[in-house]
Image 1: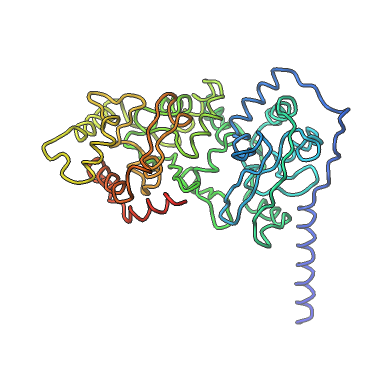
Image 2 (image 1 turned 90 degrees about the vertical axis):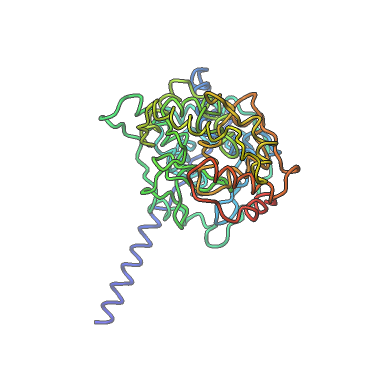
Length: 428
């Protein structure tokens, strides 16, 4: 009896391992030669340029001091550091020997030309939703317009066995839906266009969805917000903390100019997403993204609702006899109020902090980042900058401003351990 059981168990294990090996194996796709280089029509190349921007290809494949698209951008995955690869058309170090077929497989299946599984820091779980035509356009752009360049590839810093690429096949089995995007026939064409862009090339969920212990997006918490590079990527659902709900027009405006009148500006990791990426999309696509995200966020507020919220916040921001009673009020009055003061209506680029996302999130990290380092010219709204106070204010002083804004301008519970959090962000 025991022998039969052991034989059966061993057979099942062998069959399972054999099945997994078959699933995980991918053959090499033959390299192309220089004589096989393709010519692409200008319209396809331009389309690829726009899609490559919307997918932030350059942002993640360019190190701070590197040539564009030569890789070595460090990504802290929580399991270790991964370095992006060179995707210039360089034959030796880039993807110059990759055929269109090989590029398509990488984008749709997360497998490189040689048959190795790619780590999911490369968001093929989103790119799998893209059409073959769109991916081929990106390939045409890279092969036509990006200058071949060399860069010594840094070694990933993952512990064993997580550095074994074969294991990524198991991760895919558990977490990746490789189906292309299927339009929802109950929704409008504009909604479906927005969904296709958000779910696919712009991969918004990669930052705005919390991940499980194995690093996969939690499908039951889609767009519920997450932490990225020590910033908070706010929820894009009804849990978004903004006092005024995001409308389709708000999302569209934010992606076009980097700021909205009510919700805030694109700073930190979100800044290049807008300024070096999404804003390259045509306005019709940004409007479509707005339509899709507005439905996700469940916006039901009316203009009258918004006007009441704005009026109440502006009233709280007006000077009173009790003004400057404590350090936070005094510092806010001297360092912040001159730019963050509105009278009858909120001016674009002059955020009212009573309804701004950064003062209403559960975590104060975003507000601390902005007070420390400001908003540079390549963040937020073009032409509007905010100075940083890293060298002018100490941790206790910044904490007092944050605490003052939280207690006096929102109905949220007080943040705790503010000085310690500020010190931690300041030194990292």
